[in-house]
Image 1 (cartoon, rainbow, N blue to C red):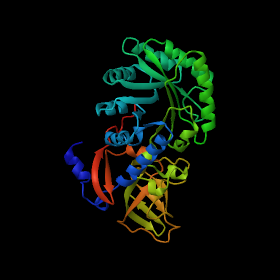
Image 2 (cartoon, one colour):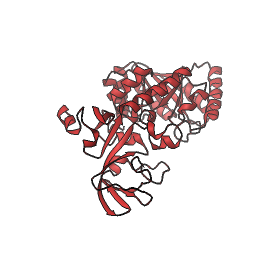
Image 3 (cartoon, rainbow, N blue to C red):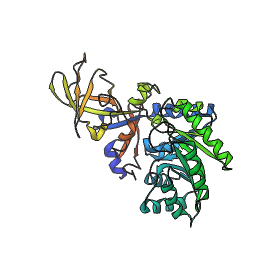
Image 4 (cartoon, rainbow, N blue to C red):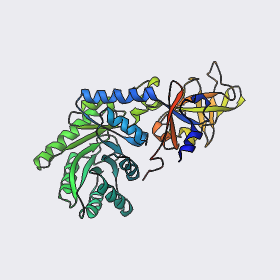
Length: 365
């Protein structure tokens, strides 16, 4: 996208109320406070912090996070990592099982460009595939992913973790880089117990474990309760969203991203229709019964999304928006919104400060 096209989105000094909608807008003050708050917590507890960039996909924001004290970054996919490597980031952890020759080729090219690439694996299939590629080039650090209660990827027992660590250490072209987990919120005791048992097995096998990476914004402020971990990963905290408010991680006043939307129809007294549908707000419910928190009319419920429309139930509202009125919405899940727009508009006190391209938008493999 060119600079001219950026000017068509917004320009510094413009009031955000004048922007065409639907449009995410990011509050600079809230953004900075979120970065500072989390980095201060990590520093106070002697933990290294590795922010996950899938939330924002913007190199300029990763630069802010690193400048505040973060170590390296966490990417979810190779193509994301390529964008951030091109922007000058060297210490990159990709937290996804990487399989297939087309991805291996891109991974090898990325590894040749930067000095701090690391990946994860939770199976012999993934490990053997990586080894076949990297045996002929510089060694690639691989962390064993462990399921400590999150119920997603990861080996199920400390014994399996130690077994895979040994397989990595013996594999040509690979180096055992450590352990990684993405636990469920409130599961710190299970995480610590799993890691302690695994570390004992690794020590008995003579395998050093340089990195122990814990993760997740929902469990962020429990990070100090997992003393075995050397670092923590989190992404959503930089913007925050409705699900993080529900989790007690923050308040609505800490949500840096809001979606500006315009009321385009009032078919009945108790129904309004806005120009933000699933292509702007995401269809993620995350356990909610509606699709976002309406800041200006908190009693309103966004009950239905089609691609281009959102339907609001106003029956509980004492005041109701008029046709043409712009409203602000805190999304259920901010990370998905980042992948729906080419640019993010930033503001301070309602005045545009900058427009940043979402450089890794759509890069999901």
